[in-house]
Structures are given as structure tokens and as C-alpha cells.
Image 1: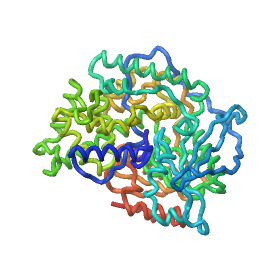
Image 2 (image 1 turned 180 degrees about the horizontal axis):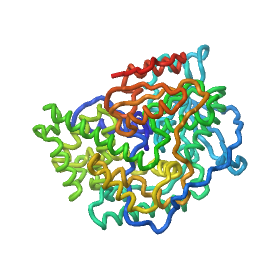
Image 3 (image 1 turned 30 degrees about the horizontal axis):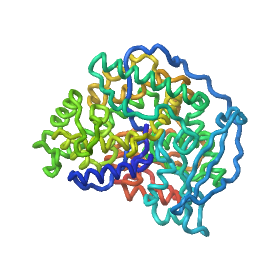
Image 4 (image 1 turned 60 degrees about the horizontal axis):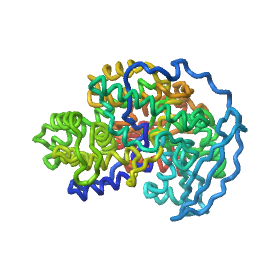
Length: 524
């Protein structure tokens, strides 16, 4: 999973990559929605692992006792923002058995007299930073929203400025591994990488790994509600943030004031259904991009309308021989891992399609500079060569939330099953979660529909061309929730709030005045 376009700290990083694209003479599109949650992380697969959790579901954890949290002590942290931390139990089933810190940022409402309270937002992930999102994306919210809400972001447990998980400091070596294995040697390399990664996570985070599930994050969200002084929660969650939201509403339905879930995840999906849905959705997004490019002579990767053939030829050539990053003067080589990360990152927003076209055209000419510029922020690599802990937090959460097969032959069978429906993404998505096969902590969440019985209306936004959280998931979630209300956005890209004025008007009206959108609302 991954953040909704505008988040995960990815906005500034991807904007920088697009600026680079313009400087390289590529094109000048509107700023796109950056890399997203629920984001696939191209990694590993192969033979039967020799160690790892069994396929037996974990025993349900004891019922967590209510936790009372004091009001947050906010301090000025520059540029109009306030910062604070809230201390929460590491294990809600044993509240006295250690604590973790949750980092928060607050952009205060501009009119204190008419202030409603806090609007807590989450950009997705798992691994996305809500603190960075609020700092980078304040302009996403209308003047009316800014007037009446404190916009509050938080880093979930395990993420960046909160008590963080860290497995591997430098992921450059992983980027050199082919996530679309063609040989037994490549399969073994993927398997070894997955095993080594899980072992590194276990070695460095033994006291933290068991406590990073979405259930715990949802309970932290209620602690945040108390810390900001609100009797009920107003929440806007994107992508993976929708799973946090639906889990919260199931746990605390009477604590919800208003909730909007954009780019929805259906909590009833198991790992196979989740990745199959994503693979087919990304395949559809790639097909739409290539068709759009073929129809426009202005598209720099036009190839006389033969864009599919040109794309396949280019990716096959990169699979055989990596590219240099000539214009970046970077010594790294661009192989399949980086190339596919660049493609996936660019499919999160239609506004980034011109950049993808320029990226592919430059790569066809033998220069992978733009691929590297797009892949780095998507993979959490910073300009100085260091990495955020986004990938570590991603797996730490995902491996607790989804029961993963321990026999790698299962992942290989998934790839085979997907080959017809999603030929470009079958391997990428089928092998995405192999580290979970070796994870030292068994999964604890059992996929189940969320009803949130007793909660007020919960707005679910789905985009028909969403590659990361397929539209069908939003439809399912809206039906599972006792009070679910669906807004449909017809269009490409991940999440709808920033992509459609129609969606934004309806969502804002609900968050501000609790005006429920009309049934069947569809936005173009």
C-alpha cells in the first residue's frame, strides 16, 4: 500500500523530480499526484522459505482497555505550524508495558471564534508521513476549511518522527535486484533479499515489530482525538488512511463526528485479492496512458501510434541491459527495479503522464536520468543518498495486517494467474510482499467487512481509474458500512479530493456543515 497522491511527504520530492524533467527539456505538466499508498514495493520471491511464520492466523489480542490521554502541549515549530507529541501504550492490551511517541503537527484555524475543532488527516502508506503531508500540502484545503479547522497531521507509530522502525539504512542494493525475475538466479536473489530484509528488521526492532498494526494505529487516532481536545473526531483519510479510518469507526463509532475515506481499501480483502485488484488496476492505468499517448502527436513517446510495442521493447531492453543516468551524472545504473518504480509512480496522476512520456523517450535514447529522478522519491531516497524509513514502516505494518503465504511457490502461482489480466504488473504485484513470508511476528488482522454500526454518515470516495485502490473497493466499503455514502469520481488517478472540484465541494460541505452528499453523486 502507499500514500494518496498528495502525500507521504512525496509531494515536494516528486515536484522536484518534475522540475528536473522540465529542466531536462521534457515537458511542463501540472504538478501530479505523487507516489501512492497502498503502494506496491517491488521486492522478492522464490523457493520455499526455510523459516518464517506459519500460515496459522494469530490468536486475537485481548480486548484493549480505554486509554485516557491528556491535552497536547503544543510548541511553535515554524512557518505557522505547531508541533506536539502524544505518548500512547506500545501494547494496548497491556497499557503499562511501555510506550511509543506519536508526532503531530497542527496548522491552526484562521478564525478561532468559528473554529469547529481539528480535522485529522492521513495521507496513506503504510509509511506515509502525515506531518510532512500537512506541512507540504496546506494549499490543498480551501479558505473555508482553513478558517474553521485546525489541520492536524500525524506520523503513525513506526513512521519517521514518531517512534520509528528502521531495518536497512541504505536501499540502493535492493534497487539493483530485478523485481520481475526471468531466471532461477534472479529468483534466488529476490528470495535472499527478502530473507535478509526480514532478519534485519527482526534484529533491530524486536521490541517494536509486534505493535505496528492498523488496529494499534486506529487506537492511537483516538488518543490524538483526546490530545487535541475534541469530543468527537473529524477525519479525512486517503488510501491506506481509509483502512485506519474504517478500523477506527468500527472500534469507536460513537466517537466519530465526520469521516471521509478517499481512495478506499476494502478491509474484507485478503492479501491475494488485494494484490490481484491492484495489478489489474495498474494494468488499466498503463493501458490508458499508452492509448492516450498514441492518440496525441504532441506526446513525445508517440511512436507513430505504436506506444504499446515501444513500451514493451524499452522495458525488455532495460531488463537485459541497464541504463546510465547521463544527465544526472549519477553513477547508479537504471535496471528493471528503478524503471518500474518510475512507471508506477507516474501512474498515480494523469497530470504526470507527460512526464512519463518524456521519461520513456529519454530512456529510449539511452539515458535513464528521468527514471531515476522519478523513482528516488517514490522509493524514499533523499537527494543526499539517505532513505526515509517508509519502506520499513510499510512492511512492518503490512506483514501484521495481512496473512502472507510462507511458501514462495504460492507467489509464483499468483504471478502465473495474473499473466493474462495484468501482464505488465503480474510479477511486480504477485511478489510484492515476500518479506512477510519471513516476518518474525505473525499477522494479527483478520480480513473482515467494516460495519461501524452507530457511526454517523461516512463518506467514501472512489475514482473509476484509480490504479492503487480500485474503484470496486470504494463501492464495497460504502456498502459494508452501515452509514456509508459513495461519491464516484469518473477519471484517472489515485484519490479524488485534489483531482475534482466537485468532489472537494461535496466533501468540504460535509466536513464543515455535516451536509450529506446526495445519493449517487458522480463527479467528472
